[in-house]
Length: 184
Image (cartoon, rainbow, N blue to C red):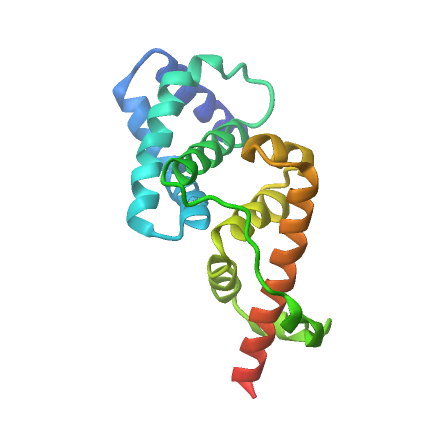
């Protein structure tokens, strides 16, 4: 394990020295995980690839600011999440969602269906959420940001972040419940 850490630190040092081989190796090592983040926020794989490349440009130009404190991958994740959010705002695709949730009154709290679904099916349900719901859900439930951090990132009120998350959860429960009906 120490050799992996050493290798990563060597890659980081190489990238800080503008070494193209180190940059290529860093890209190859982290591109699949960072692409997953981009796809989770943007849904469209082609757009996600564009944002992946933009994110790596930012990583390489800002790598000198990485002090070594904390996880390098965590530092990179923040860059990719921010880049995806910037893209959403730039195409005016980001908005706080307002959905009639009256249909959710019948949603069952029994999550035995979740155990029957694959990770891909659950991610597909998340991806089908409206953009605002999906973004807040990803930031809070998957990335682990607080509602205060999300509010600051998205330029919304903290209460809006909380309500978006609650509505996203309800809608996700409905989507999962609908999958349960399909299994019957």
